[in-house]
Length: 347
Image (cartoon, rainbow, N blue to C red):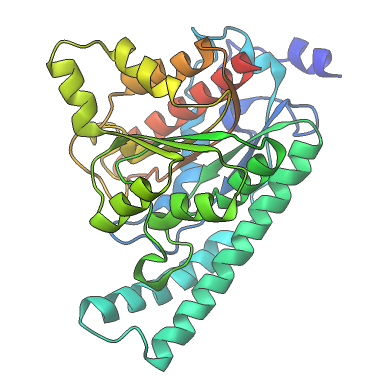
């Protein structure tokens, strides 16, 4: 069946939006890699809009040419797209308004212990836990079917269920975390599953995680630094450290070798788009000066695979689509395609 699907598809033709990323013709059952779009954004603490990213990246992906220099013909192995749950985005939008009221209350000096705030926090935290269970269930179902799974967010809280599922299947897995932020805050602003807490939660709710290697981080607080120093699984390569190594005559290859050496054989990639420099993602929710170039990020991902390590899952989060153009979604679509093809190449 797959051979017929491939034979009937012209990779050189214009992309047609058939509801599948990159216009590919595979159902999830036919594909070796399954993408789960999760249009969820509730706890974003600065800018917004990432709930629209799965659809925006889908539209932009029609412009991605399918030849990949790292793995030509990789698409033939099949990238399938799961149907988006249409109830998630409207539910997230309602909860987002509640979350904004909580944030405004706290920023105005209000007590987090007030009965109204506690009710709002409970609703948000319970809904976020349900979202995590949904992603976990979908991820486990397809992992059990022998597929690789990637999540397309949404804010950076959404992949926790996938990380839990991957860590259960691949004990000792390492997370390669590309981000401007450490995301090691515990229940930031009272939100247990804040986008700023994803890696704290991964370390505490996915016991199979054997390493967390953070790359490009440049905005973090004392509390997060203490969490990192107290957990031997956490290795950080700050943006300043990466830049200084190159300013002082080192090569990006040498830097990448150090990063890769900190990872175990099986790797989960958590890619927050704001890990890139803001010229690549100007509308992401919390942009920070500095960051990796697109080419540096791709080179790092390729170095992971060339080392013999296997990418066993991934997420792409925090793409903030712009009403003025497709640039952010365009970059996001290309990061997504590279993650897919390098995952194929690694296994």
